[in-house]
Amino acid sequence: MITIKTSKEIKLMRETCALAAETLKLISSQVRVGISTDEINTIAHNYIIKTGAIPAPLNYHGFPKSICTSRNSVICHGIPKSDEFLREGDIINLDVTTKLNNYHGDTSATFFVGDKEKFDPKIIKLVEVTYESLFLGIKEVKPGARFGNIGAVIEEFAHSYGFSVVHEYCGHGIGKEFHEEPQVLHYGKRNSGAEMKPGMIFTIEPMINLGARHCKLLSDGWTVVTTDGKLSAQFEHTILVTEAGYEILTLFS
Image 1 (tube, rainbow, N blue to C red):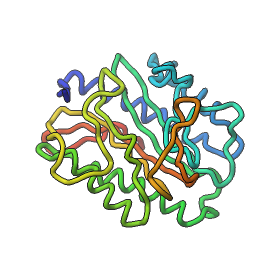
Image 2 (image 1 turned 90 degrees about the vertical axis):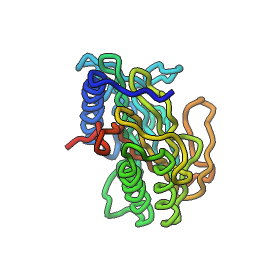
Image 3 (image 1 turned 180 degrees about the vertical axis):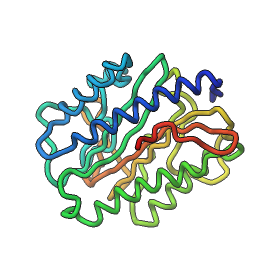
């Protein structure tokens, strides 16, 4: 069942989502050649704990770190490592989820490592299209609309540039639980799926691949990579359905 948040719950969601956004902003400033993904994880962990919140991924079904760091061909759920150092020409997705006053805020973004001007234009376009597809999906959010509209517009836009959309992982409802109903697919048909109603809160988080959409899970039980080894990008916001349309809860300046 898709829960409708009360005004009190929405206030708590705004607070945890603001913290998630500020955490992502902080660690984005640390993305540079030579830093390890575990160092970025430590910075995020310490900042979240200092606020009295909890990094939600830590120990979630056994996940060993406080954020996800998904580099290059890693689609999602990359585990920060002390021996994984960022290199010139990498792209990396940093995925932050906070738990503050028992409510979750979830956001992620993909960053260029090093001089963006030196990147292959196709890689730059992949990241830009992924970012734009997120906001195209968000613009479909309003009372009475169907969740299928989100996936339909994202898929159409990504395909128009020759990119593919991951099917196996999707957005989700969020609140007291890290993952709630509904599943928010990033592909599909217009006017399909459940109806959006004011008070619903969920993530939209398209994963767009440079090559084929297919993925595989590595032996660590978490890391998901493209089967063809080509790059993948992702952006994510937590969204509230309002009476007039939507509110992005995880925006940061």
